[in-house]
Length: 483
Image 1 (tube, helix red, strand yellow):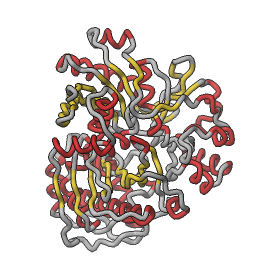
Image 2 (cartoon, helix red, strand yellow):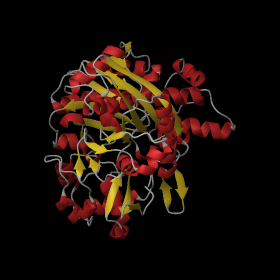
Image 3 (cartoon, helix red, strand yellow):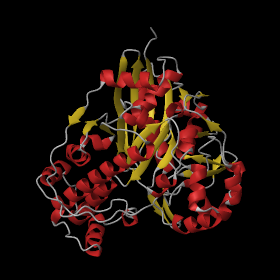
Image 4 (cartoon, helix red, strand yellow):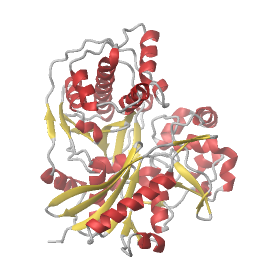
C-alpha cells in the first residue's frame, strides 16, 4: 500500500484565499487550513484590478506556515477563479489583471458579436454568454495586446511565480472562450478573427502535469524547503466538482461568491436551447464536461452585508441575521442573474428598484431582504438544475451543495424545498479537496479514476442531508431573462 502524501492546496476565491495542507492516501484524506486571507480588489484610475502581488505575498506566508507545521510536505498546486489574466512580456507582468466585474467589458461584447454571431460563438466555445469571459476582456484590451508576448490566467500566473513554468491549464483555459469545445485546443482562427494574437496563448497543460520544483528565491523564503509543483483542475469549480461524492444521478452547486449549478457529463451539449438557456460547457478533471449555469451566488448577500456594515460603521453578526431570515417571509422572488446585480454596490437598493420595475412588493428590513435573496437563489438553483437535466437528457435524484454555501443551512433547506430533491451539503472545502486529490494521484500516493478519488472523500468526511418540505412562500416571481 502506498504511503500517504502531504500536499499544499492553494485555493484562491473571488473574496478570499486559503492555503490548505492535506494528507492523502489510500485510507482517506485529511485537511488542515493553515492560512486564510482576504482577496480585496483595488480600484485604480483605469478600473478595478486584482491585487495579485498581495495575494502572492499571502500565499508565500501560508506556505511558510505549512512547511513549518508539516516538514514532510511534498507538493503544491494552485487553483483560482476563472477568466482573468495578466499580460506578460519576457516573463514580466506588463498589466495588472483586471477584475471581471470591471465595466470595461461592456463595449467589447458588441465588438466581438459584430465579428462573430453569438450562436456561432457558442458552437465554437460552448460557453454561456457572460460579459466578462476572457474573450471579451481581450477585445477590450485592444492595442495593449501588442505589448505582450503571452498571457497567463491567474492560477498559471501564481504557478509561474512559484516555479517558472509558462502554460495554461485546460480547465481554466476552457473558460476563456478561445478554446475549441470540440477539439480541446486553442481556436487560432477565432482569435485571429477577433484581432487577438494567437501567439500570446500559452501551451495547454492538463491536470496532473508535473511542473517541477520551486524557484530558488521561493525555496529560500521557505527555509530551503522544496516542493513539487503540479497542475490540478486550476479553475476552482473544476477542483470543487472533483472534490465531491458526485454520483451518476447527482447534480451539483458549487456555492460561494458564485453558484455554479449543473451536471457532470462526458460530452458537451451545444444545442440552441442550451445556448438560449445560458448553459456553459467547461472542462473538468479527467476530461469530464461541467455543464452548468453561472448563478450570481452568495455575492448578493455578502455585498448586501457590506452595504449594511458601511451604514452601521461596524461588523454585522451573520448568525443573528440568518436566524431572523429563517423566521421572515420573502415578498418576491427576483431574477438573481439580472445584470444590475453584477457590479459592486448597494444590492438592497437594487432589489427595491427591481421590485418597483416589476410591480412586485419590496422586502422590508434586513431579515426580509436576506430571506428574499436566499429564497431567490434557491429558486434559481432548482430551476437551473431541472433545466440542465432536461437539456442533457438526464434524471437527477439529489443535489450536492459544496463550498461555503454548504454552511448556510437556510439556503440548503430552501434549495431542497424548491427543487423537491434531497440536498447533500458539503464538503465546505471541496475545492481544496479536489486540488489535493489530483496532486496526490500525480505524486503516486493514490491511483484510480475520478470515482476512486471521490470514494476517499465519501469515506472520510461528514455531510448534512436536507429533505424537501412543503413550500411556505408563495412570493411572486418575475420572468427570468435569457442570457
